[in-house]
Length: 282
Image (cartoon, rainbow, N blue to C red; front, side, top):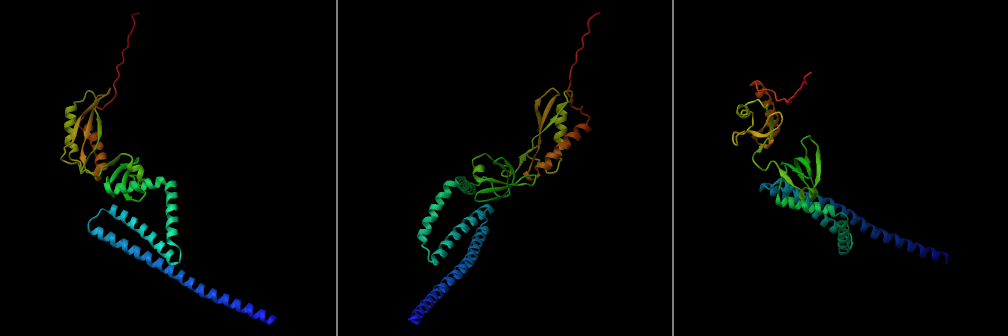
């Protein structure tokens, strides 16, 4: 009887081992296949995104649009790939899709700010108030746009600091694009003494500033009286240049104002104060 029990136990154990081997081998094959599908799928996604971007690039599509389209396609195809692999492993994809929708709703409620940034990024791409490479002032940051992402825009400031600004903050605020127009005006002032001949000073500055490199001949340099103060008249000095030459023209014009007026012998602008002394008769 003991031998019978042992034989039955051994038979059950062998059957269990065979069952584990059968299903374990099948599960291992599925796991390895899923890993292979993931690797191949990721490669195919990268290849497809690259093809789309190259095709759009040949059509001279803006680089900003290329990055945005590439990111959107990558995210979408990765989600499809994950759902496909889970379905291959035997999971109910409908249940997974419902779970994904519920999670998406919860994330949407919790991360409404991110979704607002995503929507604003889409509007930036469509309306194109600026593009990569433009020098802008948006969201309180001034600099050159290096990338327009799904949620934020990267701006490199003039002091070489990379700043990420949320797309919603940019789109909900004023946007100044200094690159959009072919040229821009440099705003400077020149203080004159009250005893100076402002017409001669204006003519001299126009002549000298027009010779500064990268100052445009048209529109011509503007020099006019802007205001008056206790020292004397204040001249508005306004040369025009292309955006990439702005700071060079700005600093060169300041030096020209100082050197030209000084060499021409114009009196230094100094505040004057009249002092009246009264003496009482002794």
